[in-house]
Image (cartoon, rainbow, N blue to C red; front, side, top):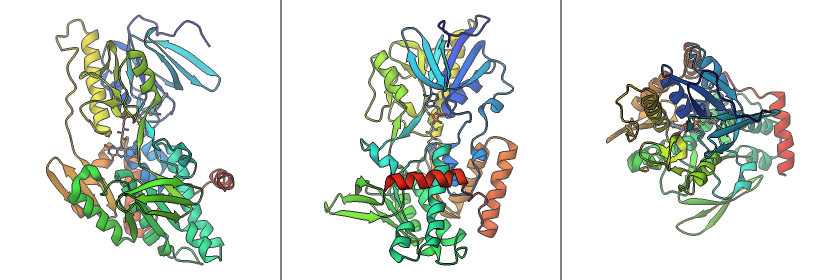
Length: 447
Ligand SMILES: Cc1cc2nc3c(=O)[nH]c(=O)nc-3n(C[C@H](O)[C@H](O)[C@H](O)COP(=O)(O)OP(=O)(O)OC[C@H]3O[C@@H](n4cnc5c(N)ncnc54)[C@H](O)[C@@H]3O)c2cc1C
């Protein structure tokens, strides 16, 4: 531990970036040729491509394919120093950031600060649901979910009790946004196709899959038509979709929801419960907002200025899922474009010859949204253009493949997808002993 805040030698403008996700990494990469020294701090050692996390959770692809090492990604960028530690304090008055990892702790002095720490799962004040219904925000979450899903199928093979088998083969997903729909579709495919015929004592098609949401439609951001299309597709796969269904309780074995129209309460019993119903910005948002005297909304998103600075602090920027500005959605493109915008402003600030506007407003360009519903079927919304089915699926695969980082990972993803299309098999259904033992201990504690 050092008392004097760390600052790189050489006296160049020091930019501290918190978070190596979409927003932070893009800021750093766009500053490659700027006359600055960058310290990039992330509690994870990898850059996570969250949109394909559901494929890790359901054994389609391996973890490394969506989580390249941040250090290797930045190997050729000389003006960045990566720190794998968790930011525990930001002090706007002193212009410092403190990061810790086990016995390591260091405070960094900044000239410009970019906070891009993203968001976590929100249980809307019911944090105790998390123990029984984990969300999927990190690689750990996805691997944990995979272990829960595959363990449920494995345990169903070991019991002769029909009620216990039904409990084990019931999957309840809360939240019918893109993540919930994609996960539901993949669990249905595991049951109906991939794992069908591989167990001796039962058929996996007997699995019951429920998708619940308090909203009146599936995939609200995609509009009614695509929402209905996605719902029909899932229902054809045997998924029971319950809308206007507000979850009121989650226990080790049950999910209770209230029908918002009839007020009737229903309790479903199922071993595997997954939460994909809400997000909350990193607590670092609230920490910065309080010091800057600006508002953070109920989801912890910080009201930033049009140029993505925070309050009166011209050298403090925030990007991505943490911001509240002009109702921008929590999407990768908002973070990517925000990161590029902030890099441009910092570059304009440090380049004495630059005539660029250092206070230029962030102008987001909506490139549309897409979600896979099942094999050969996705929904796509590009402005007023909406389409679905096979064309949507091809568009989804093509676009997401271009975002996978590195030729090796891209090829590996392609091989995994092709294997699944041609043979039903998935190459990443393993549960490690470590995961199985941890899961058994968690199960015992949950009872
Ligand atoms: C399962 C899932 C599926 C998604 N699918 C899509 C999709 O299909 N299309 C789409 O556009 N968007 C999708 N999103 C949303 C998209 O991933 C986010 O909008 C985007 O990642 C936000 O970027 P960000 O930089 O703000 O945060 P992130 O990319 O989440 O990065 C935040 C980084 O900050 C780090 N961090 C957090 N706290 C600290 C701390 N205290 N100290 C140090 N480091 C810290 C984290 O480790 C992380 O690396 C999905 C999200 C999820 C979870």
